[in-house]
Length: 231
View 1 (spheres, rainbow, N blue to C red):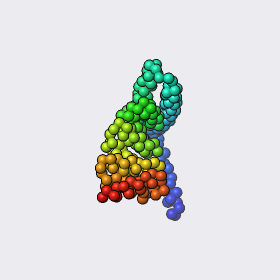
View 2 (cartoon, rainbow, N blue to C red):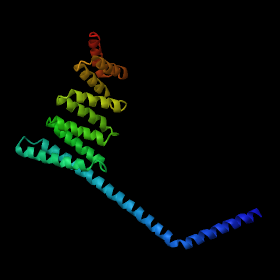
View 3 (cartoon, one colour):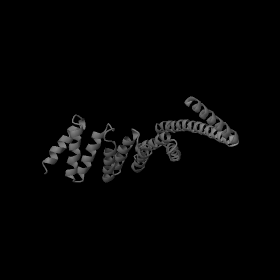
View 4 (cartoon, helix red, strand yellow):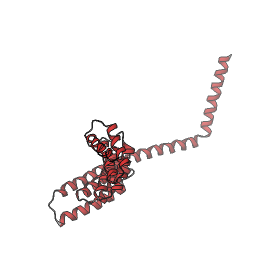
């Protein structure tokens, strides 16, 4: 008896389902068509984005190669003109590829930073490195970029900005950046130059504590001894 009831329920459900489909077949057909169009659109969109990504990688590689070819030329007005043209092209490309093509945009800003460092244009180099850090904060390049931006700030004579960037690098990437001992030494060095001996000692002591066998630790120990005599 129970089995017969279950069979009857199954038949009734099947009948209702068939009736529902028949009554709403136009709507269901429309929904299926829409889903198909959406899936096709997604597939086409992905293909377009992937092709664009590959094209951007090729383009930025060409720009990098252009600089390598230009930088070995003898100094001349023609070389300067080529560099300025390349800088403008890199800036335009980088600005256009900071979202969907982060990898290409990052490489473009890195090339810009390299050009400005080679030319000792420290404010421009600093800004280019900061762009790298902001575009790819989770990349291994981010702490490198922050460190280089801090170095550029020091080169242009802004020790406080350099200290801010070194400190940010230490705060955000202490566990992942291989040059962190050097970062802490730089923090201590700048604090010491600003007569902030307590802060300098804290940075040096952190270096000694976290990286006891690093080469920068030897220098930190010597600075700790020197500062301790001034207390």
